[in-house]
Length: 486
Image 1 (tube, rainbow, N blue to C red):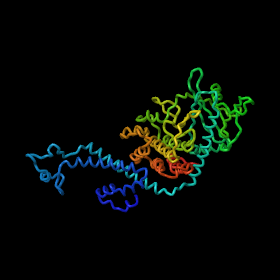
Image 2: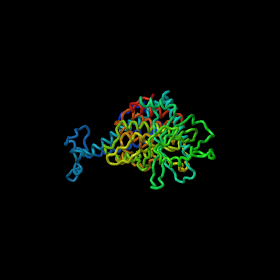
Image 3: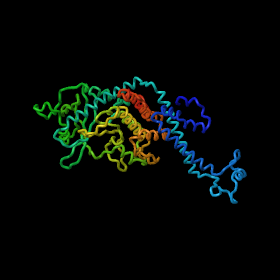
């Protein structure tokens, strides 16, 4: 542990108390535990409270030293009579309330586990310095950086393609893909489509002018060439005349007119611009027009399916979803798709959670409004924003493992979440500490790494942040899913 503490032999409880009350030791602990110090103090106070409650139950009867606990002679000798009777008569109990005593012991065990987790976590964090990132993780980070550039370019292109004459804002949903060749089939598919570039599956919302009902129209967007290279050229819709050559396509018009043809829209993405692919240019794709209202977000799914095993996800589904959402953060972090941290309310699935219906959780989507709503400009340093991203990812992973929302766990444990923004890290660590012994090792490592990286000074740098996330979170989740990455 901290310098000056590990060299001292902890002889008895009084020695421990003196150490904890020593201001110099407290300062050393604070320097060593950093952001975990407040949580450590809270656990110690709770531990002390439980011990006092147990002690209060055990000392109701005075006993002589070095005598048996059931030696009635010594009890009588240690408790003289007053006014012809024993003062403890109304309080004598030879047995404890077993249920109450067991609850206290369980709480003590829980607090001991939490202290152990705090110390072990800090030992692991300090042992990980200096930062070492494998070559494969660096390659993985570079792969996601390229996807991130495409995702950023795609949103810019969608905003530019929004019709100026349309006063309604539109919801756009993009299918989340890990973009990893996780098995032989996907690896082969990736090689077959490599020449076509990266593809995105996007759903554009439209409003039926007769029924006033919202629909989602599917579109495939294929990235062409180097989208990082800026270009002055703009694309136009094939339906536009040559007089409008300098204008970009109207996505609103294309989506509206696609409500009749039985085919999926297809666009090409080049240098922050979308080009509509004419029917003769593209392969035939089946029509896909879904009810926009028939969607359920992950928050609703976890809340409504809690306690119903028939609606629970299989472990393989949860493992793959955890990996996909973690990759999604690397792809969409710091873009218009996810402006802050990814939370369960932002993850959507097609379908409505009704009795007997299981959602297709293999196809999560992230939704955003176009044009992008104006946000109040709050200056936040990059390290703080990335810490928020890491904490929310840890929450997502915990919620997927336990198949219940954090609010449900907080209610069960009587944990106050009203000041979530200020105590998010501590509350998440508490949930992890009390349940980590039930989590599979690789999955547990990914959650622990999210929390430990909050103390890493290097996360203020975007490049280091992405590489660390690949090394300590993505790769354990890949192994946890029993997949290999080509």
